Image (cartoon, rainbow, N blue to C red):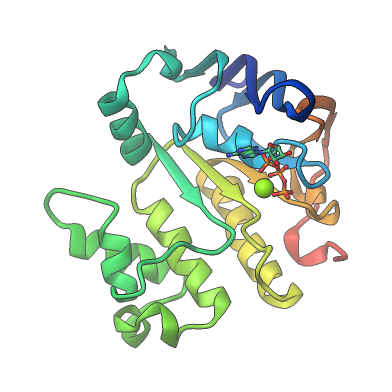
Length: 236
Ligand SMILES: Nc1ncnc2c1ncn2[C@@H]1O[C@H](COP(=O)(O)OP(=O)(O)OP(=O)(O)O)[C@@H](O)[C@H]1O
Ligand SMILES: [Mg+2]
């Protein structure tokens, strides 16, 4: 049996009161195993981003537990949570979230500290296919796919056990999206990375080990996929 990296226990997060109450997370429990590629699907507004954000420590649940590597992060104080977010989680956003005034390599370097950060940032950018001249370009000089690769490098360079992706191909055309998906899939299959990918697209779910479907803040289905497809073979 694979080792659990993350245990979510009875997570709740409600917005608003009375008639306007929205149950973004309504008693969500789930385990995520090391080396697993988990895809999270569901209609717009069902709570996917909320779930990813609370796992990443960017938002806190009203109640429930988030046990990461044996520690309940919902008990963390602000500073501990900030450190957790910085050091333990790689996050890839739909719209990249790069700093416009920094070059590719500067954006990647930002997310790490200590010695050797230039070398690490350079190696990671090369890994995602952005070596050489590209490293010194600004986000405005790059295509969407290139910017998303910088944001992947920024998440990877931290060398975290868990990477969370919120619609990582949502802003890209199909062909570029497929390339990004290939890259993410390789990280799991070849490097043993643990990854959660949120998507609207059910074809993308074909590459997952498990597909979790949410509706109205609840998990309504967990499907095990014993034979995940390759990203280059799926139909979009
Ligand atoms: N800060 C907030 N204040 C009030 N309601 C919120 C807030 N954030 C999210 N919600 C509500 O919580 C619900 C879940 O939102 P969430 O962003 O998690 O959905 P999602 O599944 O990621 O949707 P999408 O696929 O459109 O990205 C939605 O009804 C949303 O309107
Ligand atoms: Mg969302």
